[in-house]
Amino acid sequence: MASGLELVRAAKRLAAQGLMPGTTGNLSIRTHVGMLVTPSGMNWDLLEPQDLIEMGLDGERRRGQRTPTTEWRLHGGLYAARPELEAIVHTHSRFATVISCLRESIPAVHYMIALTGRPKIPCARYETYGTQELATATVESLGAGKATLLANHGQVAASFSLEDAVKVAIEVENLAFTWWHARSAGAPVILDDAEISRVQKQFESYGQNRRR
Ligand SMILES: [Zn+2]
Image (cartoon, rainbow, N blue to C red):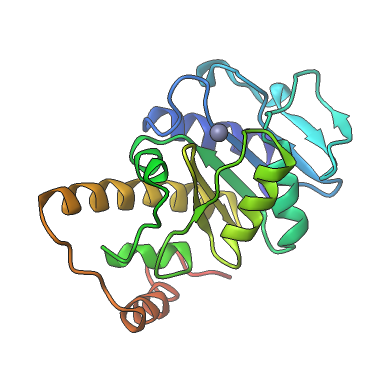
């Protein structure tokens, strides 16, 4: 289980890489009472572990003085629906948001899409930010995968570890960038499902990323 300090470091890392413009985006990790979430509308440069809020998945406050992210329902809904999830990253990263405004999924334009657990990144239907409806739409679109776009909004990455959720969020942005530019330049060739399954199997034994 990741710590509050690791959550703060992950947020600053994503902000430094340009994935969370302004005060947008929010992160969480699962805890034994529910989840630890980032505060609403806070400058990422100033974020410290004591600014985090621990709450039940139903929103009941346990610890922390700050106002929690307006998207706590989305985080709580995903943890409730997927018991194996340990961390969630939500960003308005630029190219993922561009594709989300087209309300299209991102196909297997590059083999790295295998990191998201599926051969495409779907797009959840539009719902107003911060609502239970958006939480429900996100749960449905994420399904058993690790990433989804949110229509006219951004992206969500969720995984069995904070490190992996951050990695997936960065890759979703890379894939959106690649898809946008390849499509703008011509007609990209899309990899088939069998190839993405093959890549997923190779990832299981790749480098330092082996899942214990
Ligand atoms: Zn958002």
